[in-house]
Each structure stands twice: as C-alpha cells, then as structure tokens.
Amino acid sequence: MADTRAAQLRRLWLNVHLWIALSLVALLVPISISGSLLVWHDEIDSVLNPKRYAVSGPQVSLQPSEYLAKAEAAVADDPTKPRATALRYPEPGWPVRATMRAQPREAGARPRLLNVYLDPPTGKVLDVVDFRASLFGFLHVFHENLTIPEYSGRQIVGWAGVGMLILSLTGIWLWWPRGGDFRRGLRWRRSPLFTFNLHHLLGFWISLPLAVVSATGIYLSFPQTARETMSSIAPMTPQGQRGFGQVAQHTALTADQALAAALKAEPNGKPVALFLPVQQRERPLAWRTQISRAGSGDIVTLMTDDQSGQTSPALVPLSGDRSAAWIRWIHEGSRGGPVWAVLVTLTGIFPTIFAVTGIIMWLRKRSDRKEVAGKGAKPRLRPAE
Image 1 (cartoon, rainbow, N blue to C red):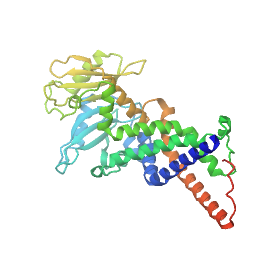
Image 2: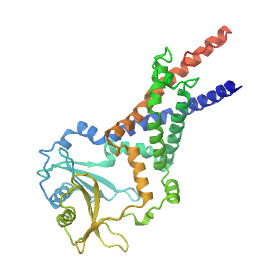
Image 3: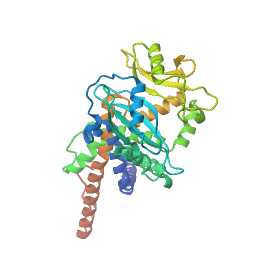
Image 4: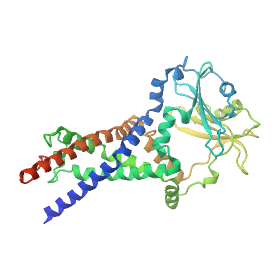
C-alpha cells in the first residue's frame, strides 16, 4: 500500500511538473535567457559596442564637474533637455558614466534615461546611449514586464516565476531515486537515454539555485504585496521618504566641492558614484557620495549638506530595506561573487535545455504508449523508473 501511495504521489508530481512546463515554456525560456544575459550586461555590451569602451587609460584624471560638463555638452542639442543625475566612477579599464534624465517626448510617458560614456583620462565622450532604446534596456524591460506593463506584464512574469519555482521543487522530488539511494541519483547512466540523463542530472545540480532565483523574482514582480509582507516582519522606510525627486537646478556647492568633502571624511577611500541633489519636500539639499574604503573594499554612503558642506554618514537602512536590497542583488547575481553570478547565469541557460530534453522525453513516452496500445501489450518500464 505504501508503495502504491508513493507511486501515486510521484505520478501526481510528474503530471504537475509536465503540464506546468508545457504551459509556460514559451514564457519561461525567453525570460530565463534574458536574465542570464543581464548578469553580464557590461561585459557583453563591451563586445558588441567596443568603441563605447575604448578608453585611453585607467586613470581618472578630471574633476567631476569636468566630466559632467562634457556629458551635458554631448546632449546639448537634445530637445528634451537631459540633466545629469549621477556620475559613476569605473573599475580600471572601464569608462566613466554620467547618467542623464530627460523629459519624455509624450505626456504621461516615463522620463528618458541617457548614459554618457566618457574616457577617464581625457573626458572624451565615447558614446551617448538612450538606455531604454538599447539592447540591454530592452532586455531589462522584457525581463521585468515583457514590454507590456499596460497589460499586467510584471504580474505575468511573477506568475511565470511561481511556475518555475514549482518546477524546480517538483524536479527535486522526481529526481530522487526510488529506494532512496542518493548516490544512485548522481550517476550519469540512470537510463540509456541521453536526454533523460541530461535532464535529470543538470536539473538536480541547478534546482536549488533555480528555486532561489525564482523566489526572489516572484518578490520583485509583486512589489506592493512584497513590500507589505516585508514591512510586516521588518521595518522599512516609507515610500515617500526614499529620496526620489527632481534634480535641483541651483546648488550652493559644486560637484568638485561635494566630492572633496566626501573624500575628506574618507581620506583613503575611492569614489564609486556621486549623486546630484534632488528636490525633496521639507528636506535640505544634499549630495550623496558612495566611497569604497581602502583595504576592506566596503562601500559607504556619505551625505554632504549643500549649504554648509558638512558631511556625515547616510542613515543606516532599516532591516527591511536591507533585506529587500539583498533580494534584488541575489536575483541579479550582482552580489555573492563570481560563483553566484555563474550560477545565476546557468539558471537562465538551463531552462532551455530542460525544455528541449523534457519535450523529447514526453514525445517519446507518448510514442511508446501508442505503440503499446497498438500491440495490446503492457507498457514497458523505462530503466530510470
């Protein structure tokens, strides 16, 4: 009776696994592939657009105001009047990037985001890119909402993530060898069929990372629900106080003075990014600077008051904000080192392999059943059963 019940449960999970995969394959494969490409967006972009990254040297030689002035001059003819919002300092061998925000061409549209790539030693403009019109801008939007936000695209991606999470967990159940011998499950030749072995063995090794990436993706796809859930267990900053707003048109400090004040507070640090002050109701203008500390490499955020020039550490994010940030970093593969980045990449590549091998296995099993039905014989068990 126990064996019969176990067989019935296995058949149930097999059917759940099969029909979710067949129903969602057209969504899961492109969403997964776009995610794996986004893990290495800078590296891939440098191959596709080498001129954009053709720096003359690693030395960041100019003051921030000079980089910002060259970036603004590069977009001076743009009728949408882009304004600089941030300056990002590179690792050696990469360009300096100025982020510009432009007014949308149509009422109600989202603001345009421009990236101006600058040569670190000379400040020469290497390229100006409308982010959302670029390849990786498209991939970001597609991965987030299938480019159909008006049709609940983000929620569709979230429910596809639910399906992927179920597939990864049921896959572990189906991978587990009958009889409970864990070591047998690690063998390549559980079956004479190449597709079966490939599907099961790759599925086992990637199942847990795939479940983690799927679960974090679900969180990001339902931001309001996720925020309410997170704030119920850990404090989070109210949405109206999170620092978004229009860049201030007039400031008392220059970008050079703001960066100098931040580096005075962290004299051995290296600038990572400088964010221009934004207008916020009932809050004074402040420059935000991210500094990488010498030795440890930890990134600290400093706030410099635009009027007094006083610099102090930014408020420590609340525990809920930190948890939400880590969920995003885990999903993107941007924290955790190269090993986790590779694993996240594989969670985007392997679903295509699973789709192909799974469909082949399903079609072969259907063919066998038709053959057996035609001969009036009992179905033969596959070696992997």
